[in-house]
Image 1 (cartoon, rainbow, N blue to C red):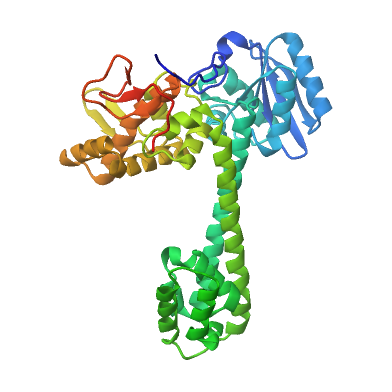
Image 2 (image 1 turned 135 degrees about the horizontal axis):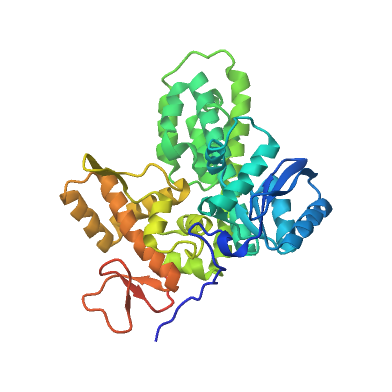
Length: 440
């Protein structure tokens, strides 16, 4: 008997997950959101404006607008920014029973180029959003504000991304400070050495290169032993060997060496925040059936599963795996014109976070999963380069991931003779496992 995770169904949507506007909508309300006020433009089925005014970032005014529009029938509210300044209009619209969608900024700009004139005003932007939603519903993206888990995961992912960027900037700043006054030790800290616990504690406790040299190698080794830092001998030896290569003191060294411990401490704090955020995401994912399904796939970890959930959800917005692959940008693009031009090439577009997640997942699987490794080597033998072979593997795995999520079944490697209790996925020879067990 099959044991499946049952994932929630959604209302009728277009291929991008937005509501099917051709059958459910009477009024299309485009909102160009702003910090203090928005501009709303609402169109009826004939394209006539039933509302075209600015309104403040105020719940009562927004509620009055949506209630007024609902007198004409079902209302679809479309914004160009679903987060931050656009969160309140969407929350109010949902509270009064309106449908929600999001028009990406690039799609809005391209649609605006099709209309006469080239002015840039809030009123025109709101009209472009409403008209595009009405005439080209496939350009819209879904917004699911009712899913608290999804919203929490999105907030944590955004916070983690900000921390990562800030940490990278701080690491580059620390390396720049070391290069300015003492280049040799900076070369010792190349790669992960600069961000491991011992290196950061060393710089926080003793400061810059000249202060380390003043303390002495013996005292540093004793400190590392007392603080129980592991594998410290090699790093300390390399640092003091580098310190012996320079005898002159660069102007401004004293001031920079007062800054170095502060930057190192900031990096350490940011690293700790990333660890805490990862624990929050992991705890949130433990109760998610969708995450459990994704984690059963070789090469898919918490971070990859998080990106897939945030960008593709439960896959119900895609008619088949080919649409998902096209959305991610891992399906080849065909160029054809009569009989003179006919070729395929790599897709440079697509959803970049999803594309990178599927590519990295395939890269890991090519080395840790026997079936993926076999497929990868077969593509290499056919003459494909490394990246092209990994992309082919990512496309193949996309079919399996789509089938797993849509059926709620966990992954199981291919068997020589599949039993009747097993179900074959759209990918040839790949079997989905019925039991609810995570891969080791």
